Length: 298
Image (cartoon, rainbow, N blue to C red; front, side, top):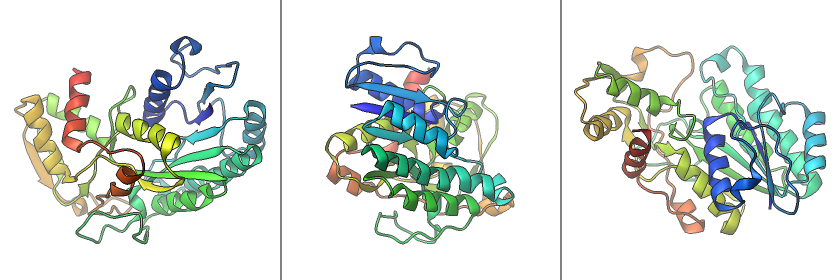
């Protein structure tokens, strides 16, 4: 199997690369860990490209690279994730999160490749009291959210499309998400402000990568919620971190409205991963994933 990985400098892409290095390919086939262009011979191989190496909004560059490498699977980890900035720069968000996905989908169709694309919980409005399933209708409330929903639709241009909604990513070799920043603050034993009115399903990039591989091996194409099992408020997640780290940090509760952020956030954004479990992979509980991440981080 030949895989083309885009957005290779990011947090999720690092976990994807580690997952497929360990499980699909021989380690000596990978020349470095800096995501430089890697040419492989034979029927198996992985080509991991950063934004500097492949701008996915450039359809000519994408078409040329895909035709040259002829992958069996394109895994798209490139994304515009500046939620608030997107309110004033809608063009940039739409180009990367939506129109570039259409480019990748069409390129995948040209060579008969499957496309894996990652979306977000932000496609929902958060006005519920139970985890969202894949059957629930989206209702985006921000430019960022709308751009990600369009990307889901455009991914369907590929002959086989796997759209995986993830949220609150943490862990991996390039840990830098909200959860990881929270870990740093708690380790510093300072007061930590956390939301009491935002409920999420935290997602370990290590588990997301494992689920991605499982879906490609035995799951049908389609839309999946790819998050760790269970859900919590950010305050509850902070409490668990304090317990695991045996920290003396103090949590300071706050509400989303206290920050007056430019982009709306879904307050209840928990996702149900039952479909993923039935199809290919049972995601561990978020508490388990968090404990595993902290063991590695130490």
